[in-house]
Image (cartoon, rainbow, N blue to C red; front, side):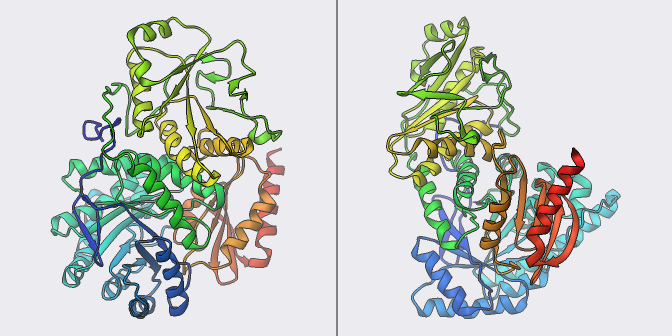
Length: 575
């Protein structure tokens, strides 16, 4: 996206068409909508109704259910009736994979149907490379157009909405063969469907692109918005970081990815995907929405974009090295001594002042401090680190403005961004700090982060800071778990299994382990993980080494032990 169409420094929602989802309006000037997904069987009417009510009571606006087949799609009608009878007229979304005919049925009972371009008419992903001539590829697109158009005609008749939802983990072999496992492939997979919607004058469409890699998720959605804009398409966007995991890590990853896009006015509805009870997702999402949208109508920030900055493919800002900071080194953490090797900050604070860098001069600056005299002094400064801070209601915009100004002026000193919060809980701090700092790191603008919050334990702040760096894939300090939130397709006790895998592998610093409930996105997301634990059937699990399935359909009660053995054997083989 040319940033001529987006203001890096001032918050403004992206303009979209209005979409009606069962009476709930999304996009345009409408408020951001928060949603979740059940993890019950869609055939379990009472269980699904109870879970949906808990989601709505927490503040959820829309709820999605998995529909493996026609019987699940039909039973959504019974679930809807039971909800209305209890006073809950919440829009329901049918989640369809692998079977276009199920989508045709689901639209009769759901308010919106999600289809996945990776498996709507294309066969399931097998990681096979297929050579297509241009003519053969055009024929595949024609087959897609004919099938998808017939589905859109049913949606028009029923007055229903759709979501074109691409997951990086389920790109089709057709797309992979032509575009590779790239952001361009993800965007094109989505655009093939959106062009058909536009050509058929069907505008009741929400779009999503999700991946477990937050940095890739942010830049890929930016590219999608740019491509939509260039082709005159303005459908609303649903945001989410898929397989974000649970607890602290799941919240940080979601706030980093979703917050980075919301900060630029991108996004109309969102889900924070946690490997927990679905209702737990809603307060996190609401906190994030409230924090970002409070920037509406803020005092304007006048700034100029640095010409060398690429919004669609941001690169790390080039700086000189000053001690441990800058010069291409991993971003540093300024924080508190806590005795934990994994979360020991690079720069320690004593009475709020850096204490272990006597030879470094730290210059605290706000954007308004950047007079020409100050800038000229920075140009000649040595052994100096800029500490950028903001008290603006839109701190992302003002901190961006500061860094862009210094870049324009040729100041190549490293920059640490400092944010001071006044939150009463670590939960609130995680969401806000992750949203503020994650986007600056993804944009490549800063060389370190410094978080302060009176009343919050220093160990928790340190862990948060390292968690943000890990979520942006700039610095790995612990094991990363790529874990799906679970749904009606999940083949085992996902939450309990994830806890056991964490207990057995948390010492494996820097390793990425995927824990997936089923095969819809599991094998695809394994490409971003070192190892994968994927539900294959009831009581059966398959183990992956990256894309390769190395043990198939093993008994669930043996799976964790065999995962550990696989990791250990690989480690021995590398010695």
